[in-house]
Image (cartoon, rainbow, N blue to C red; front, side, top):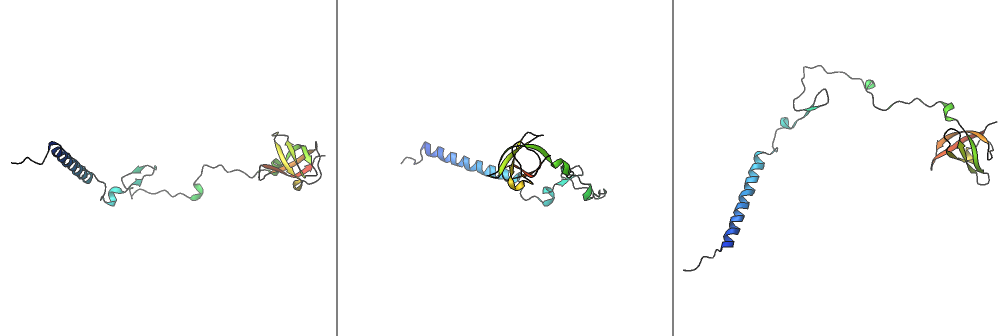
Amino acid sequence: MGRSQETFSKKEKEKKKLRKRQDKEQKREDRKTHSSKGKGIDEMMAYVDEFGNISDTPPDPTKKKKDVKAEDIQINISRQAPPDPEDLIRKGTVTMFNASKGYGFIRDHDTQESIFVHQNGLAGTIAEGNKVTFEVEKGQKGLVAVKVKLVS
C-alpha cells in the first residue's frame, strides 16, 4: 500500500482555507441582516421641527404654520448709513511733491499715514509743506488722494 499524498502542512492549509471561507460567508450574512439597503423611503426620511432640530417624526399637519414676511427676516449684517460728505474730506500736509514727475505724498493729520497723490488728482498747484484738504479713494496699490485743494 502506498502512502497518502496529503501531508500535515497540506491538511493545515486546507483547514485554513475552509475557515477563511466560512468567516467570509459569516460576515456576508451579518452584512445582509444589518444592512440599511432596501429600506423604504419612509425609513430614510428626516424632518425639521419648528425649532430647527432634525427628527424622524413628520410634522403635525393640524398645527398652524406661521407666516413670515421677507422684510421681517434680519441678516447679521448691520446696515450702514451712507457716509456724510463732510467726513470724507480729510486734512493733511504735503510731505513730498515732485512737480516734474507729477506725484507726491500727503501726511494725513488724523491718521498720520502717508497717502499717495498724483497730479491728475489736484485741483490746483501744491508744493511741499502746504496744508491741503483731500478725499481718499482706493487705488491699485493702496489709498490715493483726489480732489486735493490748498487750504488758505
